[in-house]
Length: 143
Image (cartoon, rainbow, N blue to C red; front, side, top):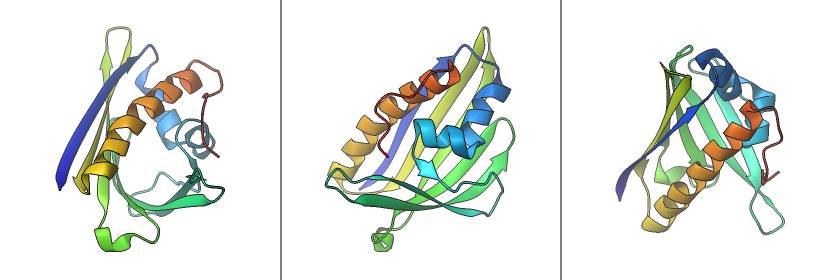
């Protein structure tokens, strides 16, 4: 089933600070997932987190496009499920009065259950990003 889900949040921080939190490996590990990310077009990277059953889920990703500090696109697929094809995650930053608007778009083709997990997961992640930007720890980050 084709899907496109969009999330938007305004952070009271300049675009450069939000961009840093989107592209710094340590920051990503705080609000999204642990990773070996490098902010370079064409670069493959992995992200991993608890699978909730005592193991780890690993996501195979790549930076498809990057235009600092305004836009970045990643491909994304769960390791072991490559037959499903990649989904795409796009981050767009826009300066607004008092801060930065972040738009996250996740799109691709998945089953309804997975789409619902994406719909439920991204709001949590953008809230955890807010905690990191505000200088705190991101609560609930699965390691």
